[in-house]
Amino acid sequence: MYLTPIEEAMLEGEAGEAVARAMGLLVALGEVFEAEGLIEVESAHVSGVSYKNLGEAGLEYLEEQAELGGRIRIRATLNPAGMDLRRWREMGVPNSFAEGQLRVIEAYRRMGVEATCTCTPYLIGHRPRAGSQVAWAESSAVAYVNSVLGARTNRETGPTALASAMTGRAPLYGYRLEEGRRPTILVDVRSRLTSRLDYGALGYLIGEVAGRSVPYIRGVRSASIEQLKALSAAIATSGGIALYHIEGLTPEAREMTPHIGGLERIVVREDSLEEVVERFHGELEDPVVCLGCPHCSLRELMEAARLLERLGGERLWAFTSRGVYEKAERLGIVEAIEGAGGRVYRDTCMVVAPLREMGWREVATDSFKAAHYLSSMGFEVRVAPLRELLGGEP
Image (cartoon, rainbow, N blue to C red; front, side, top):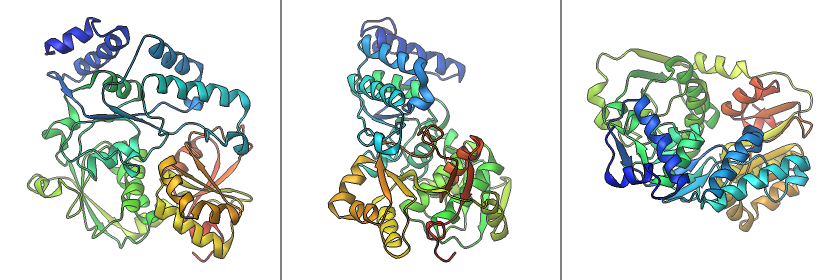
């Protein structure tokens, strides 16, 4: 694999041991995927933040990197932690967990990573330009940044995204190449999509059928940021898809049209989407209603506030980023939700928080990503539109 003189120097330790280790990881990854070399990247988004997932071994790795002088060279934001960093006691998080989680955040801060603690960095100003090379982890964010924003990243892990942040480099293969971004399967949507839930169901179904393909989707007439966020999260969860194109909507779709001839075709009808919803439609006794996987936008929090004002919802927990929370707080949205009995938390979500230790057993949500992971963890789960989850008409 070809390395420039600067990259060779980093590998040989001239920029410190932490950078040398980071470069070694990237070179090894590039050799596995037969990359010709490395490419400069403009930003990173780092996963591997929740102490629930990292444990002591992951925490020790991060603290060692910080001790070795690891510092980032490009902008790097951080995925959700396992708790609201300020209101964790109110959430019911055990002290031992909180201690480990705060040490994780401190290690990242020492390395210069922004403690954004969100899976939707594109909602708080971290929006790479179309065509730019980045190194992002977090499956839903990867699908969104590749597909909706048109930037280029492979589906990085926490350690490889951090290594790219330290070196400003990533191996040149996969979705970073023109040929890697071409569609490999055609999806004809023959169902009317009106809600976030519809888009989530579509994504979940495509992911199941298409695996790790690059779908070219036809028949979707329009979509909001929130609907594309739901689609990206679901399509990445059920099948590991990191890039999709939607005819007439996403930035690279037009140039990909010549490549769809002769592709295998999937037809999605309304009954197929209904079947996906039914799979996560269990009858629950006393669930916590969760919103915000991926993290809520300002518009979603406004919708929740309006519904709570009319329907009530003492068991609603909404999760969002600090940036969105601050805007919602200024507009009185947080006060409206919490005044109606709900809760709005930052920095975390229902998937990476220690729910068992917090006494949870049942979760109702409008997120297929959350439903997928929570059901695999043994929780009883139901998926439905938020209005229905709060007791309104379906």
